[in-house]
Each structure stands twice: as structure tokens, then as C-alpha cells.
Image 1 (tube, rainbow, N blue to C red):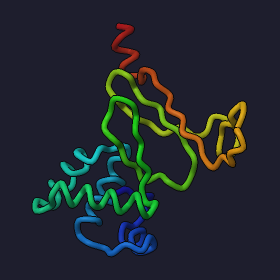
Image 2 (cartoon, rainbow, N blue to C red):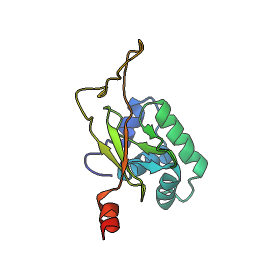
Image 3 (cartoon, rainbow, N blue to C red):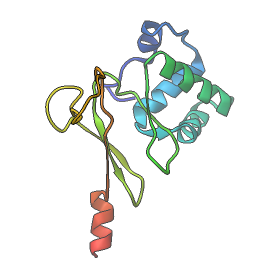
Length: 144
């Protein structure tokens, strides 16, 4: 966990969740691996907690999502990804070659960042934008 990452015990308690070894490990894995799939998080947790099960990781992620501790990202053609950055309305860059995902701040203005041409009476609370393309590494490989 980096110095800027939230303390898992405090974050879990503030969200009304009981602090368990498994939840603490999943939270720490998310802090270390933003935009990770449940399987990648399980692999990271299993290294630290060999007795952890896939189900305990899925349960923790479900609980975290219900408590608004994590954001689910569902890029087309990829497994669901999770991140701890939930306190703002940001967007994502996704590499169509290697699958790398990066955060990107809003394109223009304050949340919800984008205003539809016709909101049809909706009160917009947030916008999800996914930019698809090649990351710098993959673009360099294709140019070579």
C-alpha cells in the first residue's frame, strides 16, 4: 500500500463494514493494483493470505461496491475491473491492444463533465466515458 492510499481499517469502518483479514487484504490489493479484475485481486490476495478463497474476494468486492468503497468498470470485451477512486467523476483510457486502463480526469468542466444534447428531463449525476485506443507502448510497437 502506498502512503497516499487510504487506511483500510478506517475506510472499512467508515463505510460501516466489519474489518476482517480478508477485506483488509482485498482493499490493500486494490490500492496496489487499480483497475484490477476480481481474478487478479484474488491472485494478489492469495499471495498474502493463502487461506483466502475466490468467494471471499468476490464477497469483499460486492460489499465494497454496495458501500461505495469501490467503483466497478466494465470495459467491453474485458472482465469487470475495480478501483478505489470513487470520490470524483473521472473517465478511463483503455488500450485496445494490451488492455491497459488508465484514469483520465473529466474532459471539460465540472461533474458530470459531459452534457447530452438532449437530457430528456433527466437530472444528470455522472457520466461514464471510455476512450479506446493504443497506449504509448503498443503504439510504439505498431510503428516499429
